[in-house]
Length: 136
Image 1 (tube, rainbow, N blue to C red):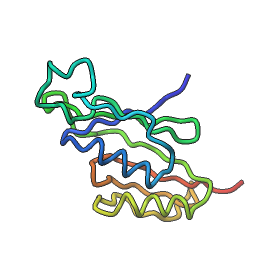
Image 2 (cartoon, rainbow, N blue to C red):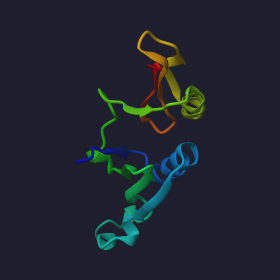
Image 3 (cartoon, helix red, strand yellow):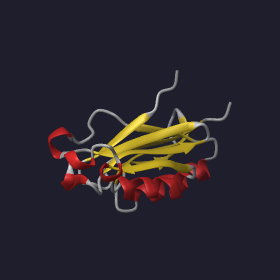
């Protein structure tokens, strides 16, 4: 079994977000299909450019997402996507990229449980925890 985060975007910014995540995190977008490219194209003519499903593959893991119609979208609350880094410099680079245009909730710094840890909501509204654990 694998657990994968699935992100919804209420402002039709899924394509922009996933292209940004691919640049910052690496990996490869292996699927990016719009409603207009799907069998549902005729059912949602106003949504033809919106993303029905996106998939970013990173080191054998996946981050997935889509644009959500307003009646089905709720702003993320009570959850964070955690990214675990072995190297603090990698975590700091990602944290700073996510903080650019986003909102830092906890600065990237040393804690009692981690070499470095920070919390940031990126410019697309996705909440991230960036964690670099203490070395044994």
